[in-house]
Image (cartoon, rainbow over all chains, first blue to last red; front, side, top):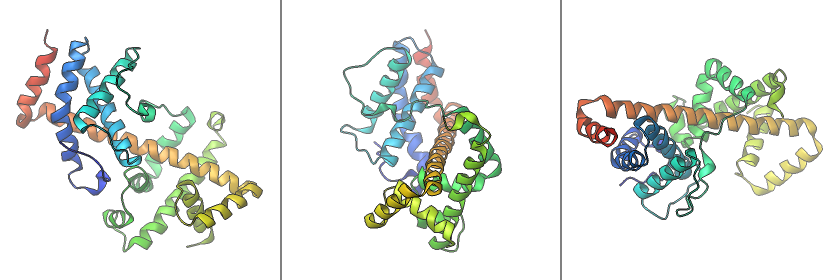
Length: 179
Length: 89
């Protein structure tokens, strides 16, 4: 069974890892949710959310579950499902589940995000590779075609500065941003 | 690096808790007495949140694409049929 421990982005089989998790764990979640009266679309939503929580815990927080990934993702899925149905679960503590779960961002942040997706995609792709996927500077440099790590590092900070300045300028127009 | 980029890097190291602890402490002290710098830190923290959300949405799309492949490719027909059988009442 797969154990995502290192930054997935550094691994060329990232897609394969998720595919294996899908093939191995999704049937268990589907069976559980169908028995609980849910449908396939609900199962997809729950499972995909669970994969996201799992990924963020492994990659962003370097968390190591006490159980195997299969049982762990099934546990996260059960928690998400019960939460969606307004039920509490007390038996299986899935630590800090709130990490992901549909945290909607503020409307003003949404507007800024949309703006950056359109006008600063290259920068955003680079920044998310470093800060979200935890790609090393060596890999990032290679992936985005820089001459060396130093050039990549300088560009990373230029991008970060650009995003920060966009937020500052846009926030002046969006009252709810700073509230 | 130009001065503004060095400052961005220093804020980065402070927020990400990386680099020399002594320099981070010095940076913290500078922020206490410099409103403009303090504002930059706040906006940079917001930038990290937006980058995080961007990454999360990108990953969501990738996972959804895997779902689509598994439910449409002939290679995974058994998987698809197995899943669908759970929902046929």
